[in-house]
Image (cartoon, rainbow, N blue to C red; front, side, top):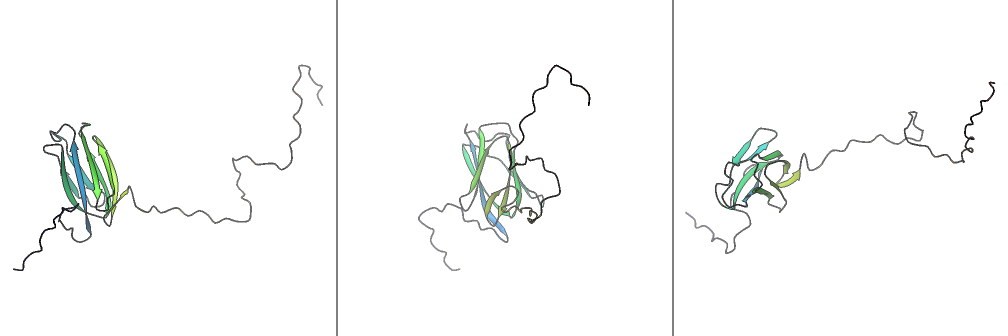
Length: 165
């Protein structure tokens, strides 16, 4: 067998796992401010498209890390336990992240190793109708500006009746 390269002297910011196919590496950092783990608290990360689900917990201590190889999809992360000592940070390999405190459900989109807000990195705008030179035939609720001054107001009503025309 051929010798393997020497390990690097400085730790890398992400572990050695290599994600295969069209999946990319993401990191979940779990925190517990009491230092006793999440107790009954669990995270659930679920894909919208195919039902892929990951679950886990911080068994003990102040913090822990889990790594995931996720494909491009829309995802949710849920921590149902009502315990404000439980929190997390979810990172991509580019340094983008979001975080939350239990209880929470958060939605995010993964695309080629990057995190985006839900539902997609590039929303599709609805095209507006082309402008025309003709005025619209539909009425508008907006006030119209008159280029000429309006006539003076009419005199206030009086208590004396006026004769009928």
